[in-house]
Image 1 (cartoon, rainbow, N blue to C red):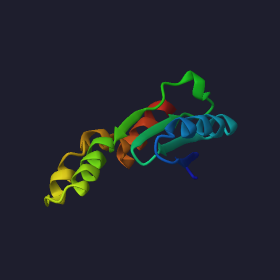
Image 2 (cartoon, rainbow, N blue to C red; image 1 turned 180 degrees about the horizontal axis):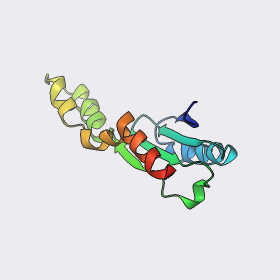
Image 3 (cartoon, rainbow, N blue to C red; image 1 turned 90 degrees about the horizontal axis):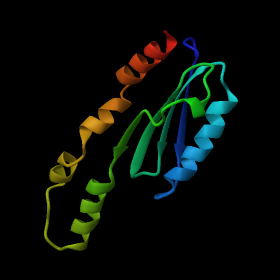
Amino acid sequence: MQNDVRFFGEVKPPKKIENARNDMVDYLDSDLDVHAVAILTDGFEWELWIRPKGESVEDLDNPHAKASLQDPLKTVRTRNMKTAPYQPHQVRNSIDTQEFSNFTLETVLEISKKSST
């Protein structure tokens, strides 16, 4: 709060990420007097949105970052249907951690500082 930043989150059922996007546009356009950071997800797809103070969401290039767990979760589902054992770390290793690195506090703070200047 002391940095005039608000964090939002919007979680929707699987395959309903578009509903989260629509809701987030409404939220972010209603409170323009602070910086806003939002994370949207349907459990499979993840998006990071950033709206600098005083700017309309429509004028921005959001989402700022995207990440997906669709392939690793599909692997888990497929392997759970089979009787052959598998190592959970193999599935964890298939997550694209580079995509999720854009969701860290350091990245969000860096983006906020750039948008404030």
